[in-house]
Length: 331
Length: 308
Image (cartoon, rainbow over all chains, first blue to last red; front, side):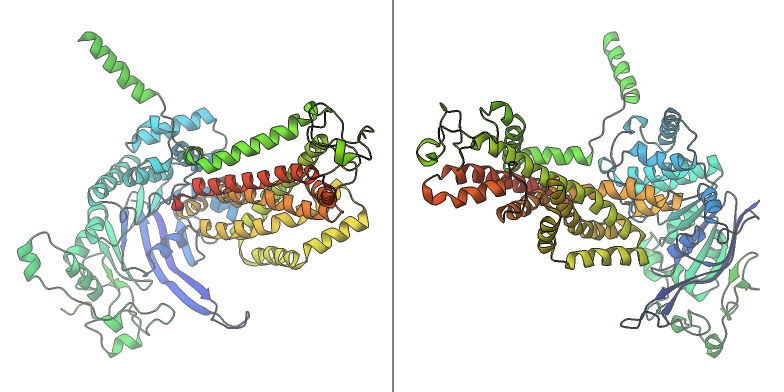
C-alpha cells in the first residue's frame, strides 16, 4: 500500500493574550496538539478518538493549514503541506476535502444545492462549462443517493441526513484522495448515522478514498476504521490496527475508554468492570510534566512525572501497535 | 389499465427528469412580508408617494417658478386650494403653484433619502464585511477610522460645508453620503464576525475559495437581510436630516425645493391663515416616513427567522 500522508512531529500552539496585559507582553501558549506522528496509507481509514477538547479537530485542521501548525505533513512522499506556498497549497486543496459535524450549518442557506456542490468544482476547474458542471453535480447527487432533480432546492428543505449527503457530494466532486471527516455523524439520529457511514464506506471502496474519521463514538469508529488513534491532550496515547486496539488495549487511557463503551446485553453490562477516571482533563495552557495522562492515570508512578513516554511498540502489544506509556507491559 | 400504466410511467419519468424548483429563503421572506398587513399598507403608501413624484409634473397645471399674478398680494383670499384655478394645493406666499412645488420637493427629498441609503448599503456593507472577515490589524484600522468619523459632529460639518462651498444638491449628497455609511458598516461588521465562524465559510476556505469570493458569495448574501432592514430605516433618517438642513435655510437652492424647505416656508406664513402651505408638504412628509417605518418593520419580521 502506498503512503498517502506522513505526519511528523505536528504541533499546534495558540497564543492567548493574557487578560489585562500590555499588547506586547508575552502571551500564554496553548498547546492544542503536541508532537503527533503517524502515517496514512491510500484507501485506508484512520479513526481518531478522544474526549472533547483533546485536539482532534485542531489536528485535522492543521493538516490542511486551516490553523497554523509546525512540523511536517508530507503528501505522497513529496511536498510538505505546511511548507509549500499558498498557491501550491491551492492545488492540494482539491486532493483533501472535509466533511463537517453540523450538516445544516455547513451549507450556505442562500445557495441552492447545485451551487453548493459545484463550488469546489468551480474553484478548481474553472475550465469546465456550466452544463458540464451541472452534469457532474447531478451524477454526484445520484451517487450519494440524492434525487438529481432536487438540484435547485435549498438546504433548509432537506433533512439532516440528506444535508450530510450534500456535504459528502461537495467533498467528492473534485475527486479527492483524502477526506477528513470531523465528527460527521455525531449530530445525526442513530438510524441516519448508519446510512451515512455505510454510504461513506461504499464510496470509499468505489473511489479508493482515504479517510480520517474523527468521532467520540467508539462503536462508530470501530465500524468504519482500519486503524484507530487515541488522543489525549493533544498527544497520541495509543495507535493500532482496529482489532488490536479493541481486543488488546495497552494504554490505561484506552482501557478506560474501552471499558466505558456500553454493551447491548444487560447481563454483561451489569457485571463488567468500568474503569472510572477521576478528575478532569487538565488545561492545555498548563499541561502536566512528563506524561500528560499521569494526573488521572491509575498506574501513575514517580517516573511518569519526570519523563515523557515515547510512542513506541511494546512487547505486550501487537505488531504496529504503538503505545505512549512507561508501564504498558504491566497488567 | 394500460393507460393507467402509461400515465404512471410518464409520471415517474417526469419525477426523475424535471427539476424541482426550490423555495429560497428570499421567497419565504417575501411570502411573510406580503402577509403582513401593516407592511403592505406602508408599501402602498410608498408606491403612491413614488407615483406622485414621478407623474405629478404631468398633472400640474403650473410650473414650479411661475408666479400667478392673479393671486399675488391676496394669497390668503385667492390662493387657496381649488380645481378651477389649477392650484390643486393652493399657492405659496409668492403666488407659485404649491402642487408643482410639492411634487418637486418630493422628488428631491426621496432622492436624498435613496442616494444616502444606497451609499450606506454599498460602502457600508463592503467596508464592514471586509473589516469583519479579514480581522486583525486591518479590522482595527478600518473600524477606528469609522470611530473617528463618527466622533465628528456631522451636522456642524455639513452646515460648514454648505456655507463654504455654496448650497448645491451635489454638496448635500456628498455630505449625507459621508455620514450615512458609518452605522451600517458597524452593524455589518458585527454580523460578519458571527457569520465568519459558520461551518460553510470554513468549508469554502478549506476547499480554497479566495477571501474576496467568500465575502461576495457567502457573507454578503447572508448579510442582505439585515442590510435591507437597516436601509429602509435609514431612508427616512436621511430625509429628516435633509429636511432639517433645509428648514434652517441651507439645503437646496431656489427655485428648487424640498419638503423641509416647503414646511419651513409654510410654518412661517401659518399666522396669515394660509394653513394649506404647511399642511400639504407636511402630509406627504409624514406619510412617507410612516410608510418607510412600516415597511422596515415588516422587512425585519420577514427576514429575521428567529423573530417569526
